[in-house]
Length: 209
Image (cartoon, rainbow, N blue to C red; front, top):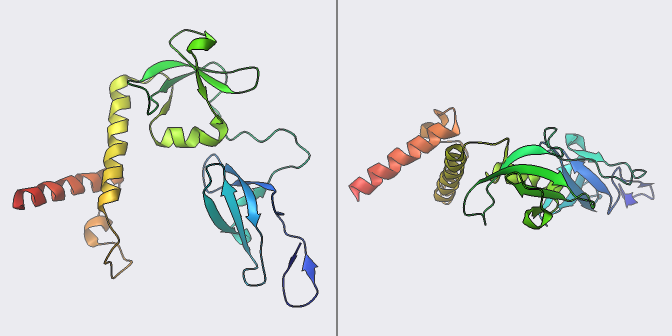
């Protein structure tokens, strides 16, 4: 319960404290826990905490939050529709020396296991803890690929992600006097164009130095 104004009127929030919600700012949506509800000063804002410990705020009017059913004992799946028992995948976890082809299966506890090659020996499987919460991150960071991808494509994807990270770390907002993007960036229509521009600028700067 929370007070919307300075009168005695007390309203029930749409998403109570400690309730579980789906956050539709990602695809698939992420699960989060409500840790802050609207107040008199901020009558439309909910604060949520994600599985990784990060915290975010969303307005109810943005329609990003969705309540999960309290009557259901099974959390809604946040996995892509193509991910199912026996699906072919390529894994290249950060602690793996090289990519591996294999399949994904769930064990008796509904935990996802990656079995490299054609083996189903559980002693050789790799446990993917809380895959529902971590799947999107594995996809975004080039650690999980749908199907058996060629390794050179996997290496290329990983190098592109590393280059993208390098570009983002070298672009500083310190000293900016305008929120309008520079013309040199606005003329690019894709991230690859921006990366090529960054390479050209970096090479030119190195030559001048």
